[in-house]
Image 1: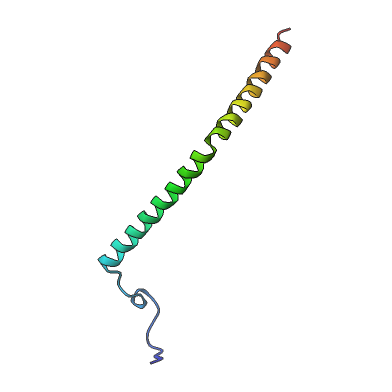
Image 2: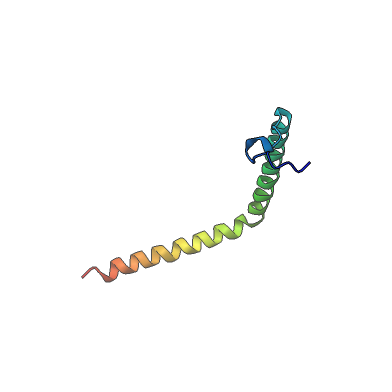
Length: 74
């Protein structure tokens, strides 16, 4: 039962079957689809606020660019 002549290595693991690999792949795809759906749902809920923040940041940046060019004109 507890033999000392068995060395650790590749023989310790059971071989992975093709069915197990396919099942793992399907589960990973399923989980990815669920997470992508949730991410899109969150973005759909807040896209208006994100657009408003983006416009505000763009307006501030353009204002600073125009101010610096107007100030450095001399």
